[in-house]
Length: 306
Picture (cartoon, one colour):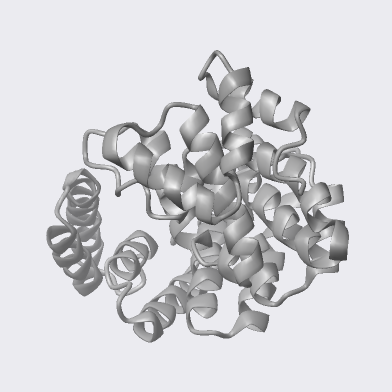
């Protein structure tokens, strides 16, 4: 009888998980996760779903994710391949929660756990995919920025084989604080590099672009989510924020991202930031508005270095 009951539970849980992953309603997803947990309190997928739907309560979210991490070691709870990916995913989420709670050392510990694990198992394609995930590396660098560990950022960036958004922005910010009087000259190429990876990100960071709607491309949501994580990193000092804003607005104007009253307004903002003459000069030089060509021209003419 117990065997039949367990089998029925497994079938019902499988059905509920399918329903949870297919719904677009967060409330419905949470309700389904709770149903599953009534049947199996250690169901890892349901624990993750529940944790993802209660982001406003970080302490409770941490408790649920730590439960999920322990549940990974429960015999027969998931197959070996799933266990590897879940281990990475749960630790990533825990690191994010610890950062949100201001416990940076614990956040960094979980980031390092994931990165070390991925590096040691990099021959596995599934693990390599997770290791190269932009948001995971972004969180790692975000914690380093929060800790103001500029030297560690640069050393990690040097050994990092993939130029992710997190690496690019962290390297830019770290270089700013370590370069002294030469910060603008050294950091201008780093800004153009960051823009070349995802040109729309800084416009989300500065609030010039609105949150993507449901019809937007997946890349837009990736850019927006990264911007949410990094939105305050360029505002560590007023000087960095103003310089960064000047570069982003200059690029936005020259790449045709603004028009009408918005364009006129941002030209005035750029003027207040000391970039009007540079804009006038580059406006007469640049013919094509394609992002890559604009960035090449800005770099070639050493814009933003003074």
